[in-house]
Length: 319
Image 1 (cartoon, rainbow, N blue to C red):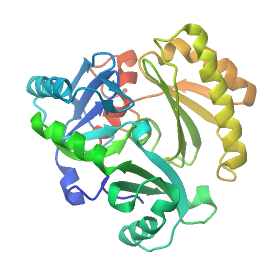
Image 2: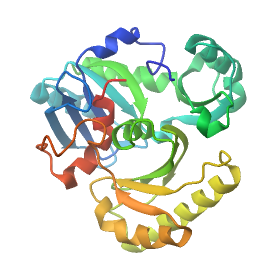
Image 3: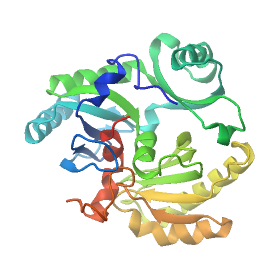
């Protein structure tokens, strides 16, 4: 069970059945991907496009030049005929926490979370927008527990204005780790998985338990950094593994690592050798895992390129 939309700013859940594209806005590029109308696992890719963003125009979600970014979005929209989009929120812009909740429906649970919001994040309720996922009882040991993502309202409202000024209509927002998890982690999975998203200048690391994002971290090293810098990534994997083993949900130890990002294959063997020391399996993500079977449909995006569409692919899927 989870909230149907990311934030109260948007229309009711039935709006989400309308066709939309996933729009992933990162520090490196803008990716969009759209599926045909239909249901997984029989979706088909009808649109995909990437445009790189000039260096330092966006850093950690902070837009340095609104006018320049708006010009990129306007051109991107004209070239790709975007109508409605579901938009990514970078990990750095979101606060994540877990809390036990009470309530027998999403509205009651949301109200319960609101009462606890200011205890867990440095934002007033009026200045925050949030959504939550309920962790499976099999993961929590029967406790009703929510994983809550909170984003400053001012950030969301700014992005909405930039998108609308560029001719793009945002219908919902979602944090990057959740979008990736929807794309690559098998539906109804109860495993605890560490997702590693390799980007140009940074690497995101996200723990997903029972399909729900429970922990996020970002390492200031990416595929365009010095090769020796991968030691930072290796060290962080060990730190996160140990942290989760001692502070995570009881009985939900990390057993698997899945990597995404265009340059992820370059570092696969290095991560494998490190992860093997603590008994973790490591593999590249299948971005189409929950959309379609490649035995029935061969996508127009190569395997290597698909790893860069993990966020957009997750955003493009219906909730």
